[in-house]
Amino acid sequence: MFAEILIERIRAANNNLLIADRTRRFSGKKIDILTADTALRLLEDAVKPGDRVGVAYRDPVQGLIVFIAALRVGAVPVFIDFRMKPDQCIGLIELMGLIRLYGDRQLPGRSESVVLQVNWAADPSETDILIPQPQHSNGFIALSSGTTGIPKAYVLNDTVISNRMLDTISYQPREHKGLLVLLSLSFAGMHNLLFPALLNQVPVHFMPLMFSTNELISMLKRKDITGVTMPPPILMDLLDAIGPVETPAFEHLRLLKCAGAPVTSEVAVKAYTYLSNSFEKGYGSTLSNTNARLLGDDIIRHPDAIGRLCRNIRLEVLDPLTLEPLPVGGTGILAFHSNMNASDIFSSTPTDERIIGDAAIPGDIGYMGHDGLLYVTGRMSDVIVRGGIAILPKVIEDHVRSQPGIRDIAIVGVDDLRLGQEIVAFVVAEGLSEAEVEKVLISTVDQDKRPRRIVLVNTLPVTVNGKLDRLKLRTMVP
Image (cartoon, rainbow, N blue to C red; front, side, top):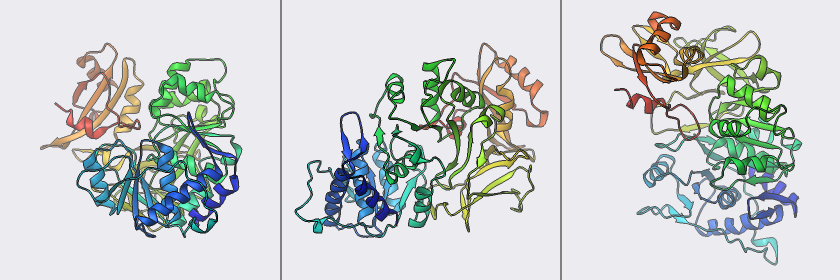
């Protein structure tokens, strides 16, 4: 269903603009021709319905053409970040059973790796008989964000992807004149923006591979750009460049969404005040799609919240030990029930994520407040058990971060023979010595939860999409 409807909507756009970058513009008709021509080449390469194929290109438009062509022949495509190292790509081929990895480079010694260039000069044949009609879609695969190691892969079957893209809950594409894509399409947040736009014949503009903050500001000031999704690092660069202003710098935007990693309440309030009153924080995962949104007055009144549940989402908060549902206000494992959850997970390493029936468990711990807002207090994997007491790092971090002289802090647990785990605090301090930081911790954190080891650092390591890299921190413990 998804493939058929996607091609139908692309064709209906005819000569209207659908995709653009700095130098090229593509109408719906041209996209139809290019994807049909590429689909014929995939059939010649013996790609069959249900086959899994990877798509890894520096040029996002070329990657999109090959991706849609794979959908047209009934294959199951997955966007792969072209920056991945060869051994990581090989790991993904083996993890997911890819029969082909199409891209603009050849992996040495791998027959699955095929260099395929889109024929930009493709023209329609004299008849449409050679242009393959969209097959029944088998959906596609989405990767977790990040480029270190082998990311997790999530199978989105046709029903799931149709529910996600046709019944969009993260934004209303019909309200837009044009959407801006900033990052690789291997990031789920980008194709969650892209495909609903194409389905609603809204032009999508791609930023170049490398762009400056000033270039981004120039694009966002264009009246034909009304929506964009970005990770926290880009958002914070934008805030630094704009600075405090009396009126939001991008008042015409109908969507300025931060996704991929949490942002602090301070950053959220600044983005809402200085950038756009249409700013929103999105909470979700590749596993379970968008689950909650924080926008409007809630950003000012409840900046620490994750947001209000999206429609068609039912939440259960489960006791970590018994998995029994907890009442409102109880802190436990978050389980989201909907018809938009991934149907399967591929992971080369142990993961907290689970699919149980129609419930997706992304591995977060939190609670539903009596105010109707969702709050996340940590990850299941981040929980530190010290001397039999469970400690949520985020709770400590949020509390200590507000103290004078503490610019940032991250808490991790390390193995300890006597207590099971010991707590280590990595602190970015402004002019404070280790002894002075210790005094802050003594005065603000309960004794049984207080870090006993302190490491002063200039910055905290983050992943490519701005998430705190706790795995890296654990390797930095002296």
